[in-house]
Length: 414
Image 1 (cartoon, rainbow, N blue to C red):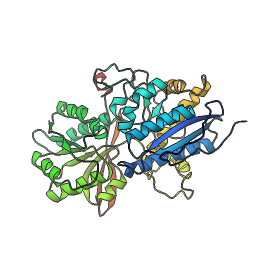
Image 2 (cartoon, rainbow, N blue to C red):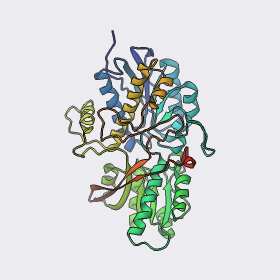
Image 3 (cartoon, rainbow, N blue to C red):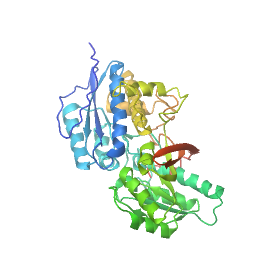
Image 4 (cartoon, rainbow, N blue to C red):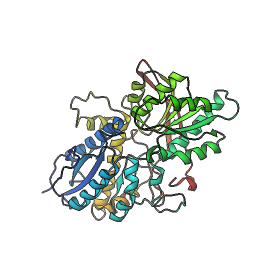
């Protein structure tokens, strides 16, 4: 008899779990999250979306009757701990898939998961993860078992500078606009740095030297003076959370006021609210927002949310919603796998290629249509761009544009 139990949701830093047999009754899914480390400011919301989705899937029949056993581990954004947990899960639980988080650890595990044939659904949108065959010479290494829901960091930044080029013209700017990449010297903010700078140059920007800013909060007046002296018109924020808040506030004190182009993890109501007072804060999004009306798929999102908030009153960020989308693309690939030979990593990967312009059932209007192929893991190349502001901590967000990028071969894996 098939077992229907709630997904295990243990927040752990080294706890062991009993082995889960990968058969028709139960399969194991690892879940790496950061809720206390450098990206925990935002990571906790995404992690809640994944955990609630896994719980909801199990309480509504699992994968056509197969239970998803899982363990959620807070690895605190430490790459060695992420690798250690991956190896533990592989040795003890016959893991068939993993929901992951950060760029450094996801990229460090590329070869492991390819060898072990474990599909990884990451919250890192590094362009390095989009080339499954390594056909682009710029690709660091082939990533055949890496998937993510959303535009890559590189493509999202390209969409932002494409928007900025039009904004510069529309606002009557003369000469070349100036673009600066601002972020830590770390795999996450570095992921789109070269790719975006090249496209900005192609579009006619003057591109400055990158401005290095720690991912930890601090006094960044010196960096802001560099931005001011460079005449930066559009500053790409490669960090997130408290670091970005510190930077924007520091720049305000020295009169550096470019239009901010935030990466997807730095653009949200929580960040705007914490900054308190800001204008021209532009960011990408790949889901609907919690407050959007008339979106059919939001009914399912709200039901999933009740797994950890029975009142249904808790406000959810779009990071939470992206976590749901990630879990549900995995769910439907698993359903395909079960119907086509069994829930194995290899079959789950094949299930990711089985459909085109694909939105998980019940999430229409929430998740954007996505297509993955054996040659191209850029699931989405359309980016919705929003303009945010805040006065006295009250954020306002309005849609600014939708940018659909070409699938250029030289951009694959880069």
